[in-house]
Image (cartoon, rainbow, N blue to C red; front, side, top):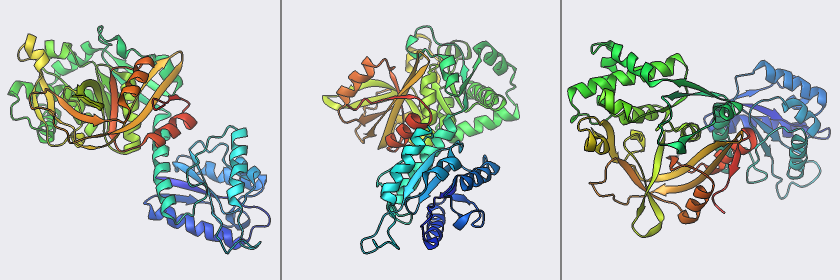
Length: 464
């Protein structure tokens, strides 16, 4: 990731403070593993921005590098001039991190006192007046070379990934909504208003493309090898391996041809009835390699899965709020048939035949990647489309080491969520579905920052 660096100025500011800030910030960004863009020091007085004219110079420089930076760091070495800052950055089009230097005890004389603590409010106020979104973090003032700023920078990078990855992307809706599942209804126009383009594909077309694939097609053979290396396929019959590979190739071709960033798949019961397989392991493998894929045509879950992937830089999973865990009010079994990514599982999964489908139609359910979800801190989220708005929630918990008996079918884990019972009531009253989506890590603040201040979603709290 790359950040554009901005340095504010005010007439009485000593030049050495700006020079020091330029060097501090370059080192801070580089040490954190990121790249930076910095305007030439000769472009303005001290290489900083004070006046509106200097702001225009910076804006033109930023425009010349459009597409080369993921966010802007607005560095305030002292009480900077807010007019030059807002002129420079009002059209930046990316998240802006407000950083202000702390004063030091023993250096409060006129030559050294910065007053950035106070000045930060002037900048944020004016940016608010101009409706330019920005990010502020704790502590209010922070030195670029401190551990606190390093932590701020990593969180800001996650905010940038989410904002830039979510403001315009494409989801593939593969198949119509299952008639029985009104819970996963969604509003395509509302999604488009939020920058989400939906491409819909009929399952009959998918099935015809699968039928046309030859067993010895190099892509089919390569997909088979990929799947067999991905998880334990030892129990899967030969014809089922070939069919799963063909379907996997066809889905990959849709993703490539339509440049899909995420998909939702109609996973039952046509594939089981006519193709005689269950596509869970294909969804699992897609998620594992970074393409958000939800089952049961849950388009809203695909949205939050993509956001969680961007924030965590790892896979997300769509899971059912499925079972209580004994009498513990703060524990729940989160489950799905076998679509969770291997990276989220305790150990390598095993492909089995779906017990639900086998009960009524033996041999039709091969493809569930069974196993257990690993223990890790997690963030969970989902959203809904309603009246032209997308409403979204975020909360945190952890997957535990608690055992689930071997006879329990599918891929599941025990999650501990503080005050779970109250949160479940809020989800039920809020009209949210029986699914939630999860990823590794606590990212609630990052996601709320991105969606509330930059992406314009209605963020609701289930905490209170």
